[in-house]
Every structure is written in C-alpha cells, then in structure tokens.
Amino acid sequence: MRVDRSESTAVFEQVAAEIRRAILDGEARRRAAAAGEGSRRELGVNANTVLRALRLLRDEGLLEFRRGRA
Image (spheres, rainbow, N blue to C red):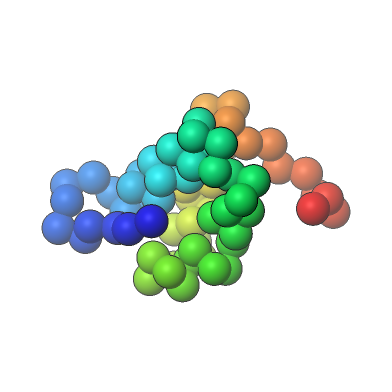
C-alpha cells in the first residue's frame, strides 16, 4: 500500500482505494491489518485518516462495523 501526497485525491480516499482493491482481489483476509495499526504505520498516515477511509467503505457497503468482534 502506498499514499501519494502529491496527488489531488484526498489521502483518506487513497487509503480507501487500497483497502477496496484488497477486498475485491481477495487479499483482505491475508491483510487483515489493512484496516489497523500496521497499515497506518506502513502508510505514514494518521489513525483518523484510516478511520475516515473505513467509514467511506462502510457507507459503500463493503465493510460492516461490529462492536466487540474480531
């Protein structure tokens, strides 16, 4: 995963696109950390940026948030 800060696309949208691609390509299970701390560090983005990306994917119906579940 990578983020290009020189792009006109917002960083959270770039993160969402990478996660979306991983889901659609079937990589999401292997890269469960894509939504977590590992990716945040890998991408060098703020946790709130990742959360914003996850909310976007939730609104698209690709993710479901559940409290207390792994």
